[in-house]
Image 1 (cartoon, rainbow, N blue to C red):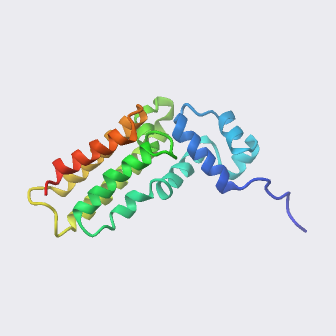
Image 2: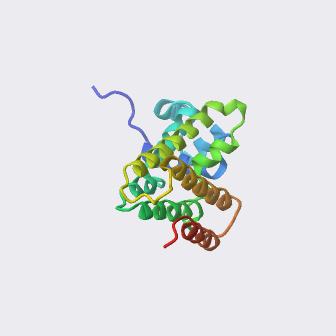
Length: 193
């Protein structure tokens, strides 16, 4: 005997819609009503499939890292340190100021814009960011071509500072072309030929 009615929505599509809404409006700026409207589901379905708002955000953040933000993990596979850094910095411009994405970075904005009531969500986004920085540090530690005088941990923090700055500028409305120029200047300054 079949159990219950089949779902009338695609959870993957609904999660993508929630991700975009969180990305555009932030965690605290997004209500459950906003989420159910954009996801095309009711609150009981949201709770049944995704859990509460915080759990849904955690799933959306995972989707962000493995979807639009996957360039960061892929960049670590580049052959040289220069290529890793170039891919990260240029990728940050495309992710945060691209024509087909919301402006800014989901994890950066969450870390900076969550108040005390959303401290656990802020910590989740911060842990995600720190994991990315740690992976970059490990990649630099293993690099035979690390430029002389560069400490792997400090260089990883610097690259993350640059990409975070790009995200903040994108969220403030800085155009893609200007961010690309800034990225190119940062690369020339950081890694002169």
